[in-house]
Length: 444
Ligand SMILES: Nc1ncnc2c1ncn2[C@@H]1O[C@H](COP(=O)(O)OP(=O)(O)O)[C@@H](O)[C@H]1O
Ligand SMILES: [Mg+2]
Image 1 (cartoon, helix red, strand yellow):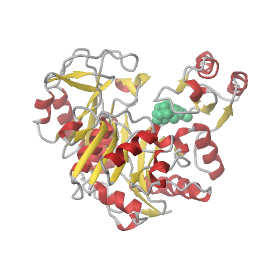
Image 2 (image 1 turned 135 degrees about the vertical axis):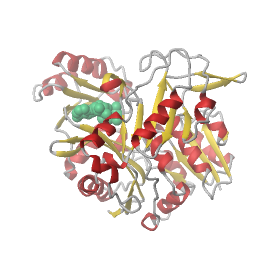
Image 3 (image 1 turned 180 degrees about the vertical axis):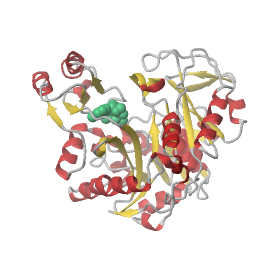
Image 4 (image 1 turned 180 degrees about the horizontal axis):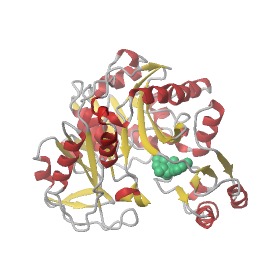
């Protein structure tokens, strides 16, 4: 089978790395890819922002299976284009991808379907939005409706900060059309958990749970980024909580989408806040998270193509996902200036020595290869991902690998996975959770 992966970040490197292991794989391509991905397959330097271009490329290389990493092509309808032609693609349709493409659609959908989420008001003008602020306490959350690459949400501590965000989004249109309409939302408190499932529209396979680290500095300080690291450990969610999330959030979401005529297939990401009243949905993503994909795929033992076949045939219930019991940790190495404007063009050294440690994979994101040297080319540069017999071991190994790598201005968080360690200290029995790693499957 000829496989094509679309995207160029750490998530797509992890996808290509995992798909290359598949018994069905004969040739694997990635467009546009990155220097790390060239170790796994052939990279094709194509601008993949238009669904038509992706379709043309898949035809040209005779791809049997196309896997989409990022959200933008899904929201603009690449899956519909492929399905019209009878070509196999992994992702939701344009109508289903609105769960991520429009935060207003997602919030109103949750309201219609009784899915737990924060209280909110939708506004389509600056004045209406400012008026709506009066109905909320502080902090308050302001969200642009459309895709904003992580720049469309402000958790405002003061009314002035909220008004400033509204002014930028709605009046100055700093995000273009994505910020023309906004959601004002109550601020929820608790721990965030990333819960991702695979679904064929009839049954659900939950992936192992992960926790992302959004803020740029240790202890969740500083502005939000695309993600500074993530880890996966069974102790993030006990089995009871997971079952509640499945029955109160995941199944109602998928059943609701189907009932409204937009059945959802493939990866669905539930960004959850574990509040004192239980899990509430912050947002949906219609794809794997980045960096969550890296630690998740490191733990996956099943053949990913078999899971994708299960989705295509509507027989996911018959496919089992097997996971390594060992936790995994991904530490993102970022360029000076990130999440603002990053400094690029710095020589990267030590990445081979890092991988030589064993149990370590260095996933590339913002890198470029030039005259036999690797240089930085973006904000998030590398995702150093390691596995270990326990969480402490995985963390130690990931940071040992990080210690081998250097580039000018490199910065990273030193506390990836620390929340997990604290949880285990509070409740050590969680180290031996009887998690049903194999099943956990349920019907919609
Ligand atoms: N209602 C909320 N209460 C508290 N924090 C929130 C809320 N909504 C979003 N956030 C914070 O902002 C981050 C980004 O918001 P999210 O809805 O995930 O949008 P996006 O990922 O598209 O930027 C979340 O990961 C969370 O940390
Ligand atoms: Mg998010």
